[in-house]
Structures are given as structure tokens and as C-alpha cells.
Length: 374
Image (spheres, helix red, strand yellow):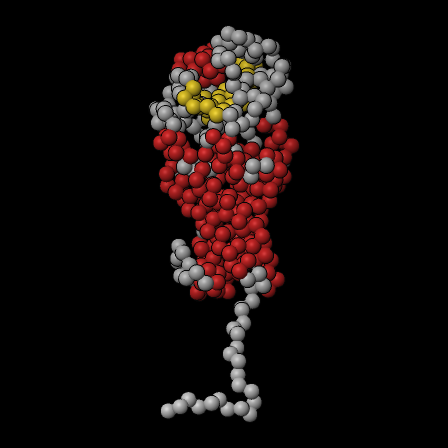
């Protein structure tokens, strides 16, 4: 137990602040749609999914002088289309559902929700940040498990408190243990789903008992079909209509242009049974003619792939409504508090040993203190 306690303390002291940052940014991002509705024009508009409206918006957006690479369409909670542009990864824009640009940016720092996501998911470091964040998630899982083991002998001292009784080390450590065990199920959920999204090998290892990794890769691969040159007057009504006819009742979620010559136009849809906000149901089209050349039903994917598709909605509270968003907010704030106080208590006393009190100087042997005058 002494070795376990030592490992728990030192690991928490070294990366506790990183976990706190991930927890706080995650708690804020859960409410991204509400923030946009309050700050961006048309973000509170009612979602429209009819073919004519979607086709008119796509035609207008893709006909612009500076054409975006893809469009993420409006949702029930956010009435804006989000545009991403090729080449400059930080360039983006919001458009209303008629296709008119309402806000654009050329730097992630221009939009709080954009740089918050970059910090939470990439740590401002791209692919390297993904790996570091995934490792931090695994470390967080180890903290939860070791913390539960260390808490068990002290379980009878459990007290439910949102904040330490006093800002002294003993009270903070007591609060840390009890808060950790209270939110342990939520932390296990958020840390596991976060690590699986950032670390492919970890995700595959968890899903291997259900589906072989090779089968999951094959199920998610794009079709090996060569498309023609993108037509300047592509009939978006025809394209979107075919996707809706192929998957009746599905919500059209994204429209993407070919990334290179010979690529295909890709449309993502979300069927009612899918939790993932943008779905994994796909339809591909020849960019020269607008003819559908391939499709993929997310509900027919292997079990391991369907489990993987649930990671993001569970992690980011995209299912379960307001109640679940509040639950995941509590999880993020609890991780912030646990990580921050772990760093404070560790660096205040890295050894973890009780500090010795200074003894008062005693008089020399054989010498009696001078009596005070009466």
C-alpha cells in the first residue's frame, strides 16, 4: 500500500494539472451549442432538413469565390452550418440555413469554442497532442483505480462535501479521497471514451473481443472508386435527394467535396438509432455527374464499430438531453478540482510525511529559570 500510495501521489502531482485542464475545457464544451445560440446570429433558428432548403444552401455555399471543403449542417440545438476550408486548417465560417455567411474567422483564437476544442482534444499540438491527451486519459484511469484501492481502508470516514472542510493538507486529502470515489463511475466513463478516441490501439484492444480490428477497419474504409472532375453546376438537389431516398428518415449531417482529383463527394447521414451527432451512415457520389456510386449503413456495421461510434456522444454528452449534459459537467468540474488540489497538496509536501513541529528551546541543564518578581 505504501508503494501504491507513493505512485498515486507522484503521478497525480506531475500530471494532475493537465487532467484539470482537460476536465475544465470538457465541462465548458458540453455547453457549446448554448453558447453559440446566445452569441451568434441565427444560431437559435429552427433546423430545416427538407431537400430544397439543403440543396439551395449547398449550391450557394459551394458557388462562392472561396469554396469550402466541407459543410457540417445545422442541428436541432444549433441552427447554423459550419464551413471548413482547404489548405488553411484554421479558416472556417458559420452560415445560416440559406447559405449566407454570418461569421468567419482565419484563426482558431477568433472563436472561443474553436480554441477550447483545440486545447481539449489536441492540446494545441495536433497529432502529438492527441497522443499526450490519450496517455493522460489512461493515467487518469490508473488514478481512479488506485484511488479506490487506497480509499477502501478509510471508507468509514466518508463524508459528502463539494469543497474541503478547511484548506489544510489533511482536510484536502480527505476531501480528495471522498470526492474521487463519489464521481469514480463518471470519471471512468469520460476518461475511457477520451482515451479510445485519441489512441486507436487502445480502442481496438477494448473492441477486439467483439470484432477483429481488421474487420472494423474494412467496415469504415471509403470505397475504392474513382470519380470524375467536380462539375461546376452539380445538381445538389439530385445528390441530396438520392441520399435521402437511400436512407429514408435519416438526417443529412455533412457534405464534403473531394479532397483530391479522382475523389468522391461524400454525404454523412444520421439514422434515428445512431447516437453519433453526425452519424456514420454514408453515401458517395461521382462529382462529375452526381450519381450515387456507393453507400454504407452504419446500423449494419460490425458490433465493435457500432460500440466505437458511441464513444464521442457519451464523452461529449451528445445524448441524454440536458440531464446528461449536467452529469458530464459535474464529471469535468470534479476532475478539475481533483487534479488541481492534487497538485497543490503534492508540491506543498512532496514526501507526504507529516511535518515536524519545531521544539521550543529548553533551558541548559542545572540552570533554573529566573523567577518573575512578585
